[in-house]
Image 1: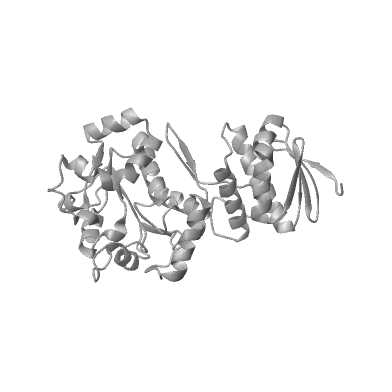
Image 2: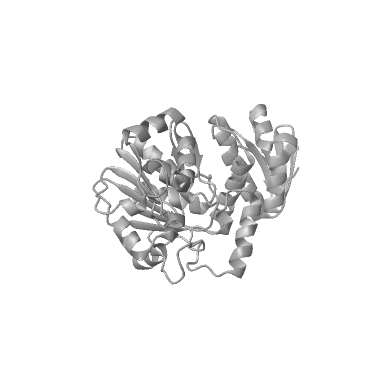
Length: 352
């Protein structure tokens, strides 16, 4: 091995020997090192595939060879994941994917205050009693930070990027911390023309099919019995968009999902419901508008009109932010290359 061995003063105490394109990382805890590398070194193989490097495990050490930039990205990725293991977390394939994305983003010089170029990798997160969600892409990182500091946040982009899931997680976090008194979930029921009276059952039963993704995220964030009690007590409220008119939503976390299917008047009506000590999160995909031909999307119009307005953050996701199966990202790219989206995605507005 070339180069001198350097002993870190950090709590994890890895030892690093290096030359121009060569790193040796040694981790003190053998069990954590094994979990870090993955079964049959699958996590190291993922690093090789994504970064174009060579990563070979030797006991509790890993030898990384390749381009200087890529090897440094690999080092920061492994450093972050090892720290996560030390703090009691797990390392799944999705965690490795997310850490790689963030390490690469740091070198792409994205202006993310939670990261320092060439330094230790950190990611924004949302924590509830049941679960902690950590950003897996730079855009998710910006989205979480925006929800922390802005009263109104738009999260727009393709399916599978975590827009709705993170919004519900943030709302659950606010409720648990006592920052808001209730959660209000809303979604336009375009398929029924918002005329829900002919459907059987009470209001909750009428709109449940449209709000299922929001429910799924809620049950991920909170124990099932607490969700049911909160719905019964009105702490979590199902509020169809068609029935929001005339209300003032105070002390609440309000989520409007599938906002691309609102009309201009519906969107204006919804946005002006914002009351004291409330937060609004509006999510949607402008490439999946189901409104009748000739009807302008309220989401598309709002993004144009509200750009740069103080207190409003707009986060745009793109196909590289898809965190579902990798095939989903390829499907999104295939459709985007054929059908032009009304709003270009993948960028963070300057006010973020």
